[in-house]
Length: 343
Image 1 (tube, rainbow, N blue to C red):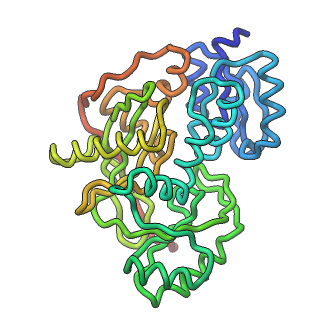
Image 2 (tube, rainbow, N blue to C red; image 1 turned 180 degrees about the horizontal axis):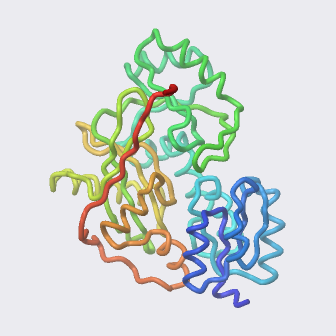
């Protein structure tokens, strides 16, 4: 097995393993016990079934693989695998995104602190939530409504809107209930520990799908999100988003600035943003692909395969994207929401 054509993949779907295999790469797969499949076992050169969120379990396996058969790059496109992929990049100097950058993007509280320190013009007010009284204090300082959410989760798990002082007891009870529980919805394999309070950002919501090439941030598309009052999970997406030229340019400029500030230089990113009266403001950043069929929409509308790009670029197997890929059409997905019952 040629180590120069060998990819270490931390987590991943059948599709990710398949696309790496189709590029002619040897895949060494670290896969969580709840996510492994027959196809992965068949296509990967080697599979270690392990809780890949635990570095103490991952490190000895990685060191053994580095000795033999060896590998030239590490990639993770799933939220729980990002930080340990960063640690592996640092350990062997592989050139991908390291732990420090990954951790400050992923940790929502750390991201808010870092932006406040390095780009105060675009900062969003935020504080850690430790006690019931913190809710009252934040509301007094920043007004209502405001948002409470875990610092370490995805798929809108545990996100709550505090409408006014009368909501504080309800929200605190829910925070207390969720603290210490393990999530396993969509891509999350986390224990909810710390929570964050942050200013409510009013305005339409979008996400930005980008790929960075040695610090050159290519905005592949801005994704329009369809939402509904009462919950935070999106009910649909469309690409490219329906935006004026001015708003489109403002979001693109804002996200490039955010990625620069955070130190992101290589790889795919999915950044959530609201277009407020003060301009675009980042909600969350993720150095991975988006969920909810966004990669499929991008492929349909632009012919850009973000997964193939992510696993193939470290090996020079795919061409770099032009500054702004052109859409040859549009694509959308919508979720249907029903009510429980019997018929």
